[in-house]
Length: 162
Ligand code: SME
Image (cartoon, rainbow, N blue to C red; front, side, top):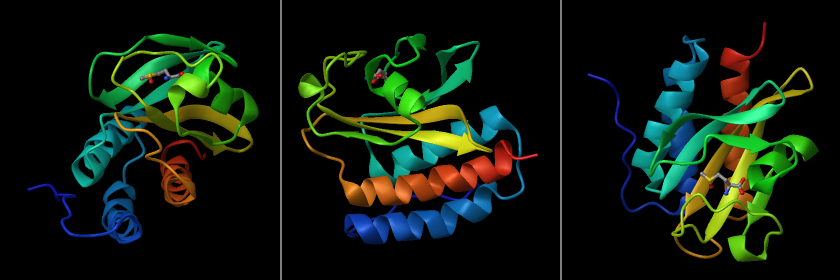
């Protein structure tokens, strides 16, 4: 049976600490991009319950929808567009407390209120972005940025480094 990533009665920091401790060994021997990204979205959904969790993959000068958990979402995002395209262009995490205040935000779902997008960078190149949406305002902060950047770095070590 596969491990479960379900945690109760933990604050955010403790939940991330436990999640990383449990999840990083789980991906440590698998190098297939789609498989690792798919299980990452499922595990994050189990651990944190956010409304939409998914990856957009850099393909031919665009971001293309990859593995995700949640409602159907837009297929393609152009470089520099929306929160995802901005994270790609700037190669930096975007924390958006209110999506309506982010110029050019792309609304895949009317339920999204706040968002965080973390680029997956290996050897100086952005290969994908992790996009997480919440249906409440100001869900994400520097704690989320800190731990999700660690997670994305570990994922890169497994699937994008030679
Ligand atoms: N809101 C994103 C688009 C992707 S959906 O949230 C799944 C953006 O502005 O890039």
